[in-house]
Amino acid sequence: MFRKITCIAAALWGLFTVAGCVVDGSESGVNATVETQTETANFIDLDNKKEGALGLIFGMAQIDDRLDYSGGDREDWRYILVSEPGMMTIKINIDQPGNIDGGWNIIDSEGRTLHRQSFSKSQGYYEFANFPVKRGVYYFQTFATSGKSIYTIATSFQPNLVPEPEPAPAVEPDEPIAQDPKPRPKTKPDPVKSDPKPDPKPKPQPADNVKYVKGFISVITEKADGSAEITIRDAGKNKGVESGAIGTIEGTNTKIETTQCFATSCRAYVPASANPKSFKKGANVVFKIEAK
Image (cartoon, rainbow, N blue to C red; front, side):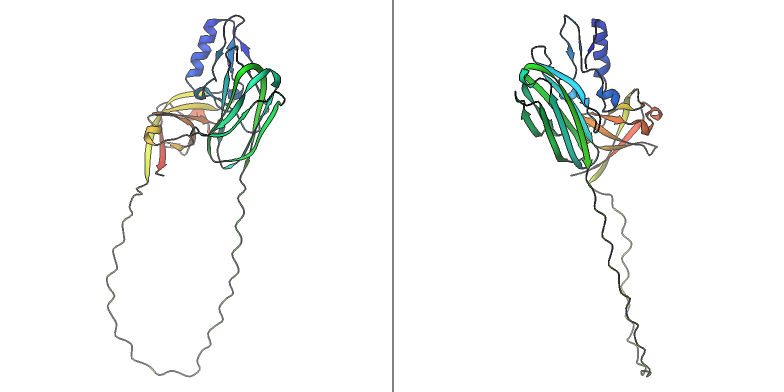
């Protein structure tokens, strides 16, 4: 889907507003404009880098996009937020496989390529099915080396099923001890030995492998569906906070999960169920970091 913007000033305004936030995986994020275009000028491609990736949500309908090498739209990026271990599937369908050369990659949050595949002139449908993933942020990249085509993408997820614990075996009661009918002669008790003094109760020691990192909310961008994107400053990779880290808003029980982390800041997606309108700029977010 492509939105045409006939005014250069409007295009620059759209670029300014998108550059300050992370596009989430909600419906509004998925349907956000991928690129703007005029009849005579080159379009502005916002998702041509990993840092500008748009959201791709499990279970949503297929999303339309395009690649056009000669037109400058040579690669597209999407991020996928995985909240628990399970099996991930990604599907892509090329409308005109004979008119395009290129391929697609799946990359984890550490930059490692999990899967790569080139487009075939005789094949339009591709599926990367039931790949085991853990919690974190994954990226889906499509690219063209020549030609152009519209394509659709979709993804689904199956969480790991945890088996129920087996019931503990029943314990048979011990048989009662028979009483000796004959009284036994009294014996002199052994001399009482003085027990050594018990050791004083040890004081609890703080865990050496745990530290707390505190940042603050600097940007809150509300979405039409009630969700929001937030930017957390002073908490990033330089302090051990990585993508997928869970933080708590200080003074509340509200927890948020980061979607992207940089050297000194992180970004997070907050669903509508968490009531993002109650958040305030400047509120502290505390992360509990365990050393690996």
